[in-house]
Image 1 (cartoon, rainbow, N blue to C red):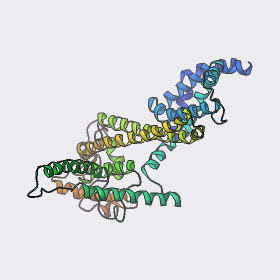
Image 2 (spheres, rainbow, N blue to C red):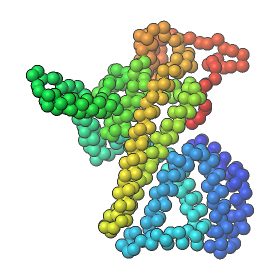
Image 3 (spheres, one colour):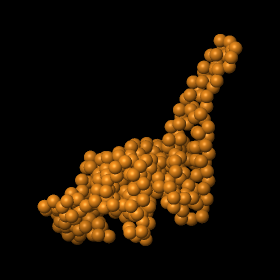
Length: 399
């Protein structure tokens, strides 16, 4: 709520908004078409000012672009007569846009407003594509079926990746050639199975015990499995759980690494939003399939774009895994220092201390005096002009 007030205040104080007010007052007494034409640069200025105040390029890419694509696509279908069954009048779109330029600015402002309203649901959108379907009975059933499908794929990959053909004694030349071809094919299948298995969270929970007891690590979607494996693998080797310690680890990241992670997250949000956008566009354009002409290929094209955007999100998630691992490799000790904890001397001591710390942080009702046995504090020497907590954060203070 505080962030929303700050953003709105920055938008209202923007110079473009201030310059737009006289134009709005002058256009108030004109006719409808004149008012809309005069307000076209005003609405454009408002859209640009709001975009800058609400996050700049990230807000435009993640929130405004998918809404604009979907709105423009549905509007084009309606105005061209796609739902009436008559001949599509594509030239009518250009004519209407030329005759009413103010409507384009109004549509841009409406898309900006829709993107602003949908912005808080961006995280929910990504979580749905990951497979967090626990709200209703039907999605829960679908999640169970989809998870079982991935469990069988993982089991099959575990069998295929161990395939090995043994030479048979006394075979002639033709059988040797056939066996060599089968061996090459088996090698390709085994390599594909190994790559597939690496995308699934096959290992245990990063912190064994109550946190991971009875919790299935597989997700209903491939995107969810890739991201969960990235979260588990990045901290498992050190006894840390990423969802539990991320809020303490992120402020300690170096500016370059924090920027790289933010860019990957922005790209992941954008591809997920475009995947859903093109999926909805496919549903909106489904009546075109009944025309049985060239326009029937439009829903097929949007469906392929939706699948392509989803596969792009999976590719981004695979790259995100390496950045998360680098965050733990390089800055886990910075997190411990910021918590005023004694740095461990050996890997075994580190794993034990991190496991205890993760279990404590995961339980909100836990008390440090009861849940952190053997943990020793190590307070840094306060420097002049610095708080007692030590040096300031190395992060870039980005949200």
